[in-house]
Each structure stands twice: as structure tokens, then as C-alpha cells.
Image (cartoon, rainbow, N blue to C red):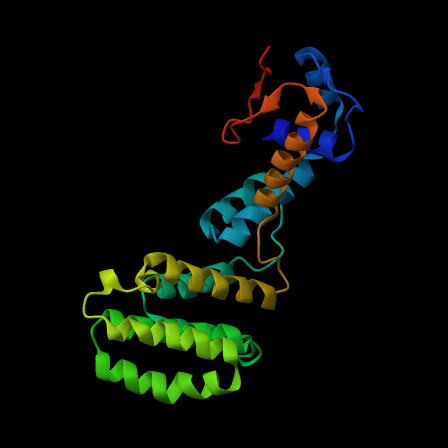
Length: 241
């Protein structure tokens, strides 16, 4: 990980030649070793990841071991993860109640999020074969919102289309019943809660690693150098000769 961060620093700061050149491993490693990154910054990066992704136990243990303080109260992570889990399990009504317990303004000020949660409720009714209840819910809760917003109306029509097929495996919108749809809604709620807590909705570490891979791709056009190809090990691999 340290090598990946250092390499990202070098690439971001323009260690590129104007022509294609070969950089020996010992020279490249020396450049990496010359980069100084504070341990506190690394700890902050790790804590940010743990908090944003909701690993409350790991965050608490890391806080004790490293002394890094989280940006938010760790107790709120448990509440946030309970909301996310409820959506992932299809318990949308419970999730909405939990969000309102955390902060009623989250849904009051985010009509798109509230619509998507209600849409997920409709999907769960259809999944469970409650056709009449699904139609009534769509008409009373979602249709009025669709009248006010064309994008909501399009999503509602797409969802109601599930009712037109006895065999959903032949339905062109069957992806709405996939677990990935639950995850999409759960992640949207998670991001909204983080934003309400003045915290980034996405962890910094994955973005840093994406930047690393992009920078390496750019450098590939200029030079042959020991490259990180596997982010899980962050091992430098010599370029092909």
C-alpha cells in the first residue's frame, strides 16, 4: 500500500519524460523511497475508508491502535449500517423509519432519494406477489410524484411493467428484481446519510487507487518502468523486455 501511494505521488507530480525511456528498478525504487508520506496521513486514509464503508468494529480497533480519530461519532456508523442492511434485505419501510430517526431532513430535502425508496417498496411488493397492494401503493404513493416529475414517471412506468409478465424471466425490466437494485438503493441512502453528517459519501482510498492506475497508463506512453499491476499486493513488476 505504501508503494502504491508513493507511486501515485510521483506520477501525480509529473515524473514523466518527454520521450519513452527505460527506468531501472533500482532507480524507480529510489524515487519511491525518497517520497516522504506522514504516518498520520496514512492512518487518516485508512480511518476514512473504515468509517465510510461502515466497518465500525475495525474503525474502533484502529482508533485505539493508531490514535487516528474518526471524523464522525462511531456510534452513528451502527445506525447507518442498520439502514443499509434493512434496504438490502428488502425491509424498506423499516429503513425509512430508521432514516427519519437519524435525521428527518434527509428525506424531506431529498425527493429523489425518497422516491427511490418508495419505488423499492413497490418492487418488494411485486417480488412477494402482492399485486393488488402493489397497484394501490403505486397509484396512491408514487403516481402523484410521477405527475410532478417526468423522470419519476418514467421510473414508475418501468417498475409497474413488472406486473405485465407472469414469468418475469421474460420481462425486459427484470433487472429491477435483482439484488443489485437493492444494493443500488442502499448505497444511495448510505451516501445521503454520510452527506448529512458532513462526511464524504465515497471513501478516498479507492479514488486514490483509480488515480494511480490512470497515472500509470499515462506514464506507459512515456516510459518503461516497474509497474504495479495487482493492487491487492502493490508489488512492482518489471516491464517486459
